[in-house]
Image (cartoon, rainbow, N blue to C red; front, side, top):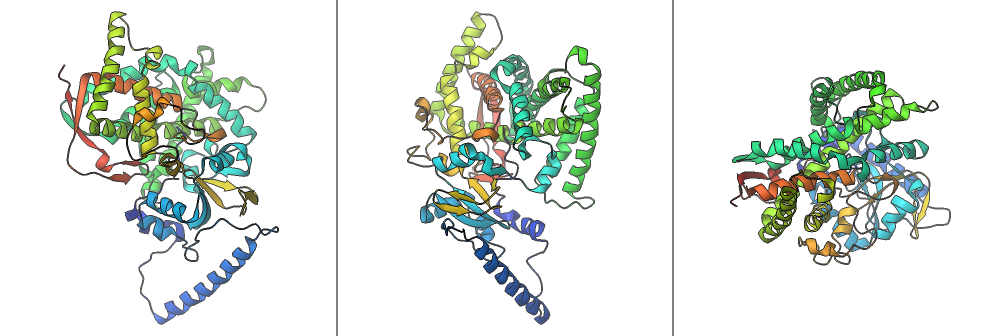
Length: 500
């Protein structure tokens, strides 16, 4: 669930807008003698600053920086990153420099790590030395008090509260609500061609609303849905806060969303005797009973919005890949269907609905989900920042440098997953080696909603595989980034009733 709020690279065609947003200038301009003179002056200044920064990067004990290339002054290797397939960019450098290497992208000096042991150090054993970091625009849009942007006591307190909302004991009662959402969507898909990604976003969003607000339907909920959708449209846009831009519209929606959430918080607090209404909001309001150090309305609102963000795009992307892999592996689809039909027979014989315990008896379907998480690796990498000068695996990482554990590279390493490009759920019949499978991150900042994400996948697959079949429309294959990697065009499919 931990939405990697901008840690995934944008597609190559978005480089020019991204460059403009980060550096404040356009690449194409008229070269005149005066412009050339100023460019030479700028170049000399940049070179001097670069030499100064290189001098500052030396450690007193003369520990070397990791091997690698910093690219061009200021620009670094940003052009290469956006010109190449992002996965090739990292894989080529790993092959050349090893599991730890340096680069310079988007104006930031970075250290990339593709070793499970090194990733564990950054994310778990020495996590206090590497804080989460995100672009300021993302922090503004979600809210600065959200759990993603903090570490220390405040983060620990929030983590306990958020986890309380997503423990199996808390979400097992949500199976019937999630099933009702599935049964609402499936008939509308029948005999139609649909964009899988967009439909999965709608489904995941409805589940996210339950997880955030519980089963109680307040009058404010519809307004929250509309404002969030406006906010989402601007989330991956250029951070230009000018009238009429998607970012500007999103920030206006964010302000209205905050006001709406404050009204909802006030209403639920006034009805405290009836309970907080469930969901994360109910848990956070329940913590208000602490007379000391209460959470403010802003802290509650930011974390509710953060949970919706985290539970939405990532889950929808995984579901899209699930349908893609099952479509492309017919024998596997039939095997999953047989498993789900067995569960279905037990439900019919007992004259009941799908229950939590049923989802614990879907081993093959669970392995398919695990293999989808590994192969697709929606969370390709995450950003951390060194909070002080760090000696790391024999190298020196200066304070302020970004550190990127490369999850996808680890998930596609043949040493841990033989024939990594092959979709093979049977590999999960044996638990993977520690720290080699991290689809939800690792350590104190790992995704607390992983069980909910897997639950909504299992419930959807139970009904979809037993009642329907889907055929991919068109012959375009490949990956697009929006920002998470998904099949091209969102995987258009035609859904038809299954011949039983």
